[in-house]
Length: 531
Image (cartoon, rainbow, N blue to C red; front, side, top):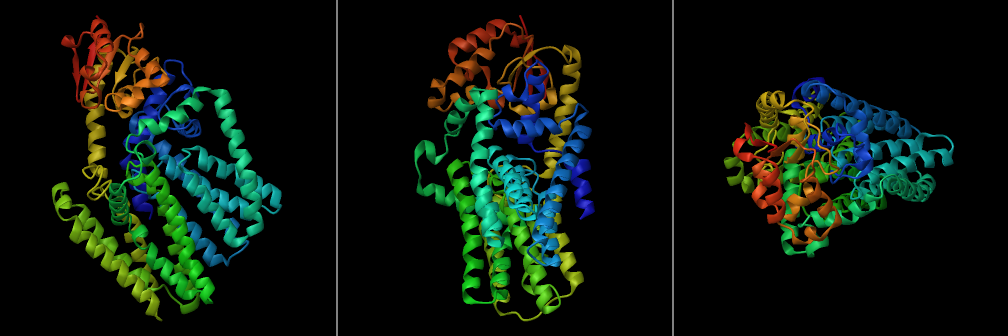
């Protein structure tokens, strides 16, 4: 596992959404704005956590430090989870669950890593451990409640992850779960109130977030197309993350080992309930991004670890039902994922059919099998399953959103952006103030200060195709940033927000202030000097 882990730290870098957040916080921060004041369509709790881990270094070193700090947080959460489970379960089970959870978070898909959903899963794992481990129930509930509150506050739609964590505690200790839940609610409300007290706009931004997402059922209502999109998203996640695909097999193994009929049904219904609440948040957002399912990755890994430990304790070795499908998926998924985007888009149906067949066979074997497999084979299966996500050819999705993004392609794109932006940035000066009409990851690589609480003009960009956004107060604030008097350059990413797409009066003001006829080309950016 150390090899793929080292690969992610030293080479893979961060995904474009995390770079968006870090870039906007940095460019606004260089102009004197704090992370609490900057809008990046992520709540303040998430912004503050990412700001705490950011360092002023060249991009490779900066991203390596951010990843290492995130991995330290994963390690601490995993150790706390193991300590909590040890009070209620045998050591092999506690160790297997905590280790599987930690490795799944550490080697999560690059699009998941450090997203709010991923961070919520880290907090949730720590919350389970704290609620179960701390000797005094009140202190345990307070600590677990704070961590559950953070689970919710990093995005709000991550509340289902907190519910799943609370359900895990309830399975092992209902009294502690009840106390933790009762304390988590006022703690969460209190921290949110503090957030609004620090930055009153946070309340307004919370109300406006759903309007920025025109695809959400909150904006347009639920449709049959949402069911198809959800199925596609789940299939893509199962194909990208073998552990998620093996979730039904893990449940079948655990149900098979259950002592009675009631326990067997509990092992089926409780995981189904956990999956349903996570999927509900995906449907609510209606964007069908793979990272919205990030909580399922450690959840599936934890159940697989538990199934492996329990089967081994009863039968003397790992179950074939998990090991053999694991090897099949660990070998097969990298092969089909390495194919061209065109091939994947054209062959999704047969590939998904094979995936489903492998899972069904695994479930059938789990229901009938009485044997075991070699431990060395189980170790190879685990390495194959977890290493899939760190492969350079691993795509963000198989044939859905960002199917053309692979780990290697994102690394190459980052190197290209750095190389093309550097000479222009050196020419205009690193401290020259600019206005960005660009996605936040462009600001991340360009780096010049932007004296605006909306460094990446998300409201203006969404307002070009979502009429409801144009009536928002934040939209008007964002427009005002585009005509600020002290900006020396306009940095435009035409593919994301061209000047022609601005309201006519604002576009005219921008053109009157900046001379794009004398623009400096910088890759996909155009840098226009002030007239």
